[in-house]
Image (cartoon, rainbow, N blue to C red; front, side, top):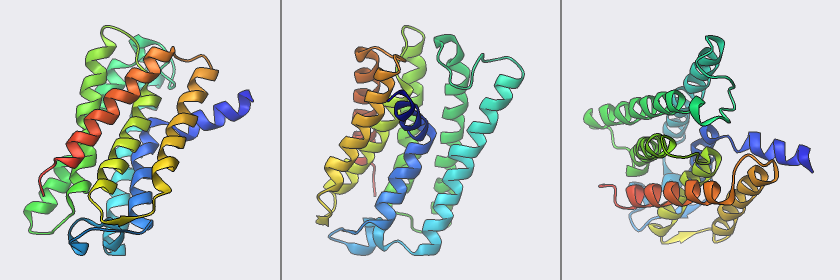
Length: 216
């Protein structure tokens, strides 16, 4: 049971959650009233690959390498960042990479290349969630895994609410994913219930609102 919880915990690393979210909205059918405007399922495959590549480079690989470097020079004691004192600099690094992601897509949009609003809204939400976690971390520990699943769930729910047709099983699926990751963290005794629920609730609310109300 402990091994299963550890596997779920590693699969649920916060850096991975936006990639999972994008894979869902890119490749599971959903239809917006204006099909080629905000339905990412109809987004050209080449654009999907480009966006995923940018997200993987700046949202996963670059932060992961930065965390490993911070561990190498003993700025943090563990890449798992279980201690509250280990988290501020990695969270700041994450915020910076989210900003780079956001402004990369903002620049692309400035070239009159249309991208559905969700492509910009996701890193924008990441900036807000990272900033919120930094602020809270000065006072108390918060579950970053739960925050990651909160981003994942908030983004998917906000996206589906703007579609006229979608696969209804996606809603219980994203809630199940959140529940599994949070249960794994609780089982491994990495966080209290309050730290888990706080991380998920804040990230969900921030991501849902910033995605749903992000201007087209």
